Length: 121
Image 1 (cartoon, helix red, strand yellow):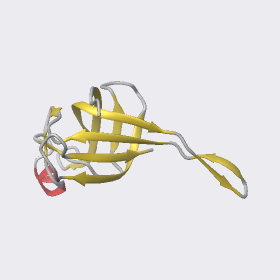
Image 2: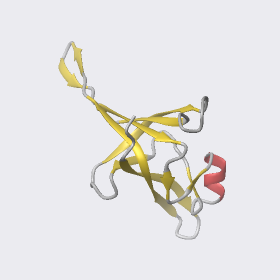
Image 3: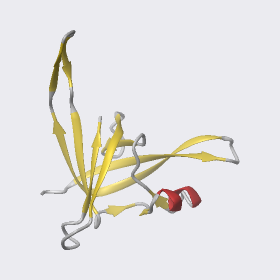
Image 4: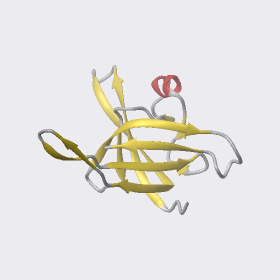
């Protein structure tokens, strides 16, 4: 896997000071981005079923440290997390964000093999 891409994760959290939801960006370097083109045939016609698979190594460089959802909610300025319904974007400012559908953790093997697989649409 040639992990040379950059992605930006946008975690959503509630800010009690401003009393609104905020998207917290985190830039991650050294990810592998794979587009998966697909189609679905239904009775009504043909539909696109395109997905993106992003492989994020545990050793990838990021602007924040990874934490579980609880750690992120306690301190969103220090941590980022990977959750369905958050947003992800290729690069730093490509303009087109995708919604995370699922996150799989592969934490076995050597440190160089451990990664998250993020599926987004």
